[in-house]
Length: 171
View 1 (cartoon, rainbow, N blue to C red):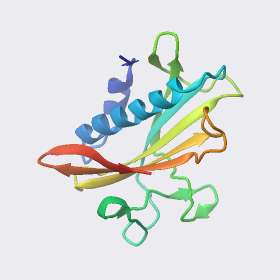
View 2 (view 1 turned 45 degrees about the vertical axis):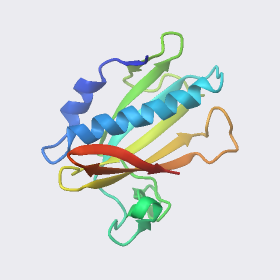
View 3 (view 1 turned 30 degrees about the vertical axis):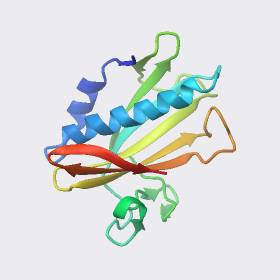
View 4 (view 1 turned 120 degrees about the horizontal axis):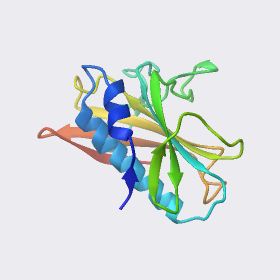
């Protein structure tokens, strides 16, 4: 079983009153499960970081759709290149964690220590108490550790039904 050190405190400190903590817990557990499956399938000598952050500035979400599982606002945002359907969502705030493979543990990190590293970056939407669905944007930089030629961007779609959040699709 995997342990995440310090994440609940860091996470809860960053949430606003209109952010649903239950969404964040389910979403992060889902992402870390997929992330660890990816890491278990490969051996890399490079350190692996996960950066999980809140994004409140999505690119016109009501007019840009991701059609999976009945449709979601497309999880793209305003990136350094400006407005784009391919824009990388910018973080309002984020937490950084370092994977320690020997102990199977995520440790909080203040900053990146190495230049040659793998980064799993996930942008989570804010204001999740107001909505019954949410889409998450993830990206591997510079690419997946197991297969550099595979697609490194992935979307996750979550829905809330009967007061419970669940991942209903990912690509």
